[in-house]
Image (cartoon, rainbow, N blue to C red):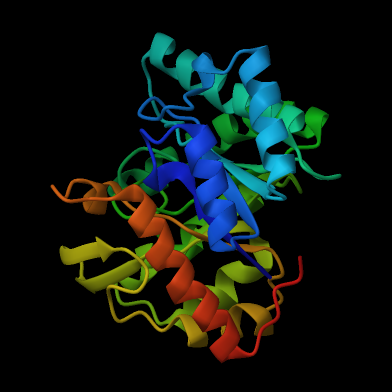
Length: 281
């Protein structure tokens, strides 16, 4: 396994500041956020900027395991849906351009929708995901669906059912264990279910149970990363463990995106060492 950081936690940090900082801390790779709230929003990345980002990644020896392109797949407004699909398909194309090795980054997204709509809407979602994956597989790009509290897909069972409905090797999971920890699912239960199907991961820290919970920066809360890492290894995951800082944390008046990355690295690199897990890159 390797250790990554998501620029989800750095929405306004210039990329030529973010990449050196992430690399200098010691991370092995990074996830690039390309949604509307980010300085690296997809439509702003012209050919010159894409080439520059690829060069910065290479210069600082960072892998790019994923792009965060979270866009609802449940929107019924035709224009909104077209924009969402444009972002997801465009992220796949961007990933091919920015790839730092033989494999392009996974495209991470959430489903949109509401949990109670699952039975009525799961085939609708599967059809739309199937359309997306039919395109991304022509590029050799995997879509990684993230189960998320409050979304149509919010449990391990639902995302596994979606994988079965779509039936493509180019659809996998972006496994963010925080969304299961805050609803009381034991770590081993969610890891056993999802680690074998995961293309990428997120980790935060978190405290409490939904609806009375808060997301935190890794190291601020009680989550046992050592146990988590050992279980991920046990259940066969060998990709990136990527720290993500939530919008909940970013709403703090004193939020410092560079300090958050530093605390995340200190916390997670120590957990790798305490778990006796060598980073493979």
